Length: 158
Ligand code: 4NP
Image (cartoon, rainbow, N blue to C red; front, side):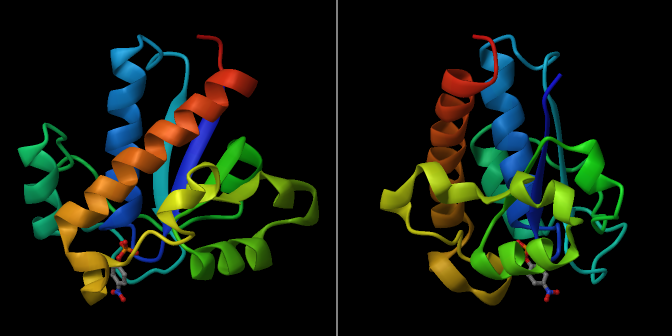
């Protein structure tokens, strides 16, 4: 069973959004019991906190519920536990590559790797980048779709 981890800095905006969006895509395809999805932050800034309210509200408007999630920091065991570790931006990618044991480093990729037209980084809404939660969700939805399409072609059984 493939295990997928989405990682941003705080685990309160982008990576929990990617988690619920990706879970919803899997559910539509009846793949939700075949794939484990989780999210984490590279920092310890918001451990135990729910996703930020602005992001929750924007997500709920689109039918994604995030209130049950709580932020956690990535831990060493995650690099062995997960098959794919997707960084939401290049700073997260650099941090993860620095943390990852050599044998697991190839699992660490950019979330938008398969949607190059969207750029490389999911903007950080916490710092007001990218025009706000709705624009960030637009990118995450498109990126998640591109990622699932790639995984279906390569790994997951449709
Ligand atoms: P996230 O957003 O990485 O998408 O969860 C952030 C949340 C908190 C902080 C930075 C980014 N912070 O510096 O506290």
